[in-house]
Length: 381
Ligand SMILES: Cc1cc2nc3c(=O)[nH]c(=O)nc-3n(C[C@H](O)[C@H](O)[C@H](O)COP(=O)(O)OP(=O)(O)OC[C@H]3O[C@@H](n4cnc5c(N)ncnc54)[C@H](O)[C@@H]3O)c2cc1C
Image (tube, rainbow, N blue to C red):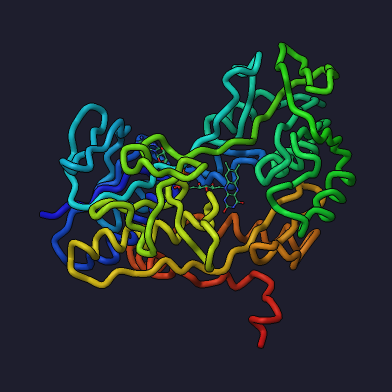
């Protein structure tokens, strides 16, 4: 029997599995998802105070749709022989979907780097939560005023004093000028002190030293910058993008028998843009890559990658949230309205469980804009 293998149990891997099961229908095709974890981790929710709520048992998604879950770590891919090595065992594939995601790269040369906290993984977020639990008041330094750093800083500000440090001379540099005024107002409102054009040069036991020479007492330093695609991308391509991602075509194919999805894939989207390392893109990337991997073996036409238009929604803690549309990030909702949209997104990203019909129907929806998003004037006409 032909075999689709998916590496990764994040959004991209899970939705690849569902996409492949959708294309399979009643045909003879086995689908295996390889990932060490027992849960799908809802990474976008790891900034929340109870990170253990941000997980879904993989068994409840994969079992109903007839996908085998092999709990193992893939160390290599041999694309000539079409095998992957998982915990030392070779597993053959006819089509492979690489969905091994990304991880935060912490600065190796930084003195005290081993003391850094992060919210990149469930274990990382748990460690930070446990470290700060029960403290009356604390001082946290958050390094990086990008998407993740801003959500971490504004959430922590409800419980302690926060210093936000960034090399750039503006906050939210990569988010562009669109939402900046909202972000700056939120940081002011929450008394978050910003040190721009600055970085951390030492993380000591209870203190932090910054590049401007200042030194302050600190209970936790949270590192948030530098996401990089899985090392497995190197086994598929020599031509990786600056984030370590594999280039793919409009059907998300990287090699004749290999597709890529999620944070490992550099796919073109909405003209000349390249997908973001985001759940927003990982989900439709998975649905299409998995579908196309199975469709290729079954002689079905492939699906184009056509996700819903790009949006962002940033949680600003006690200052609400900001929702933007488009790659120029036009602000569409702020404050309590923005926070309410974020809350709905954080519920929506939880995939359906225990029900094959619902899971497969969701895998079939590639580009449905969410009903609770404020609409553009262009969409209203
Ligand atoms: C704090 C935080 C907030 C975020 N907020 C947002 C947001 O608001 N909106 C948004 O759209 N995105 C957000 N993101 C980004 C989003 O979470 C990621 O882009 C998304 O999780 C990528 O999904 P993925 O499946 O490609 O990869 P991952 O989530 O990284 O999953 C990868 C999977 O592959 C497995 N794996 C890795 N290597 C191997 C291997 N060698 N062998 C076997 N299995 C392997 C892992 O165990 C995991 O199961 C946020 C991320 C973080 C950390």
